[in-house]
Length: 436
Image (cartoon, rainbow, N blue to C red; front, side, top):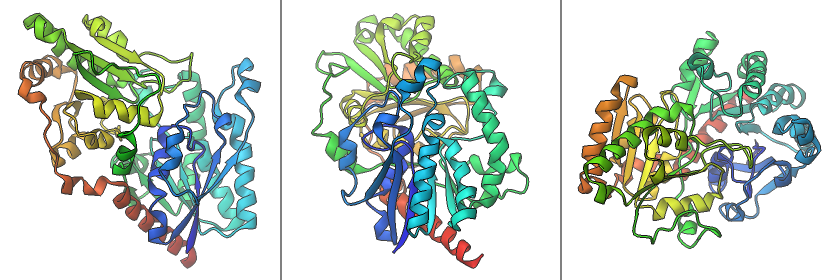
């Protein structure tokens, strides 16, 4: 059996979006001839980490997890330094080199949004002769915030420094990679625009997907301190995951539609509540609200609640599965891939979705027949969409009924299916390395 070293700085019991692909795949790698070893940071090295012990029950207990401690955040926060890679990157690199020097690995898989970890690929390839595969969960070099003049997550300074690293290293890292996967079909063409030599067709498009097994655990789980009282007689809409300035348009559509509903039928509308949970990446007390400012502008803030800090993963699944309806607000960036849509669908609740017409979510939800979808192409759509959502969702109670999705069409987005596809990428990368 071949061996793959999975580099994922965030790891269970930490709940972070960028560990989910590796976590979901662990039960299936061995079926496809790969023995995984995970290289990660210890939970105490992650500042403001949200801990969910249940995550460690979702993969085989005998899989080896190598945990590394970097500089504790308490040692550097006084100086305003909290960056995970600056504090812990060296420790992670040294641990990886010890593993590669003492054990045989056929491949390294970098699956993280800590993109500085990608720079270890060429270094380890030269020193140990091991090929590597990159997982683009987000763009590394990202011109979106510059072009739209919007505030990036983490602030402008932190983002600017990350972009300096990207412009300095990305091309070399890509040239030496033996495989590239991405969550969005737009990333390959984007990389080809930046680097004309790069073959966009070489990128394997693999969304995160989801696992029915997670929902089996979630059914018996209840949050220790629930954020929502589902028994209060109100109609609860729930959104979980990142928000940002790129989602203001979609939130505006929903809130404007709801305001019109309040004006047209107050007695029915006043029972509706909107919950936005885990909308910011920053740890307490640094979190930033994204939904509430839009709700205040529209005049519906009394019906909207935002908990901007991340919550444990299975708490989030509890809120999804118990909601009266789910909200999906998309980015005005059509390349944004909202991986949350897959667990949304498996939650089997009515869904109100507002996404860019060219987004992966729009394409996929149409294919599987999931939820009620309204799409936009630009800011001129807002009044039309607000009226359509008012009539099709709020005033039409039947529009909020749950509609079963096409489970056969959804099959390719399950963790088992996507891990099989990922294993084929690993196989090809290992073959190319041997042939070289």
